[in-house]
Length: 286
Ligand SMILES: [Fe+2]
Ligand SMILES: [Fe+2]
Image: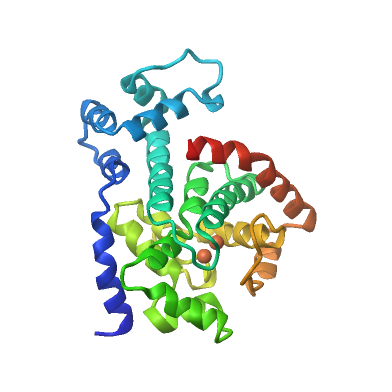
C-alpha cells in the first residue's frame, strides 16, 4: 500500500466523529427525511438548538418575529440555509474539538477559516456570481484538513512541522512527503466521509492547485477552488492572520488576471473581510 492509501485508510477513523451536525448534514440531503425527524435531531442537541435559534433570530433575518422553537426556526431557515448552518456548525465543532496548533496556532486557524469564508463569498459577489450560498461554506471548510492532520493520533503533525521549520520545506511539500497527500486532499476526503455535497469537497480538494481540477468534473467550471484560492491568498497578503510560514502563491497573479480583478478590488474584498470578521466570529463562537 502506498503512503497516500495508508493515510486515507487511517483517516477513516475520523468518520466516527459523533457530532449531530454531521447527522444533520446527512439528513438534510436525504429527500425522504421528514421535518419532524430534523426537528427532533436538533432538539436532542442543546448546542445545535441554541445555534439554530440564534441564526434564525439573527440580523440576517432582521425584522421578523422572535422565534423560540426549533420547529419555527427550521421553517424560517429552510432546507438550503439549514444545510449551510449545519456545515458551519460542523466546522466550529471540528475547530473546537481538534484545536491543535499547526502552521498557525489553533485559534488563528479558526480565524483564518472565517476570514477565507467571508473572502470567498466577497470574491463571488464582486464577480457577480448571483448564487453565492455555498461560497461561504466552501471557504470556511477549505483548511479543515489542517485540523484533521494536526490532531490525528498518529502524530503526523510533529514530523511535518519539523520538515517545515528545520528543513525549510513548504507546508504542502512536507505534508505530501510525510502523508502522500496534502491537507487539501485530506480535508476533502474527510468531508466526503461526512456526506458534504460533492462539489464542495472538490472545491476544497483543489484549493491549492486550481489548475489541476479535471475539466467538466461535477461542476462545469472550477470557480469554487479558484475563489477560495484568491480569498486565501488575499487574506495572507492583507495579514488578516499571522503571515508566518506564508509562501506567495504562484497561481494568484494568473487568477487575478483571469477574472479581471484589480488591486482596488482586492482592497475592497479585504475591507469587507475585516468589516464582517467580528460579527461572524461572534455568531459562530457563542
Ligand atoms: Fe490550504
Ligand atoms: Fe487557507
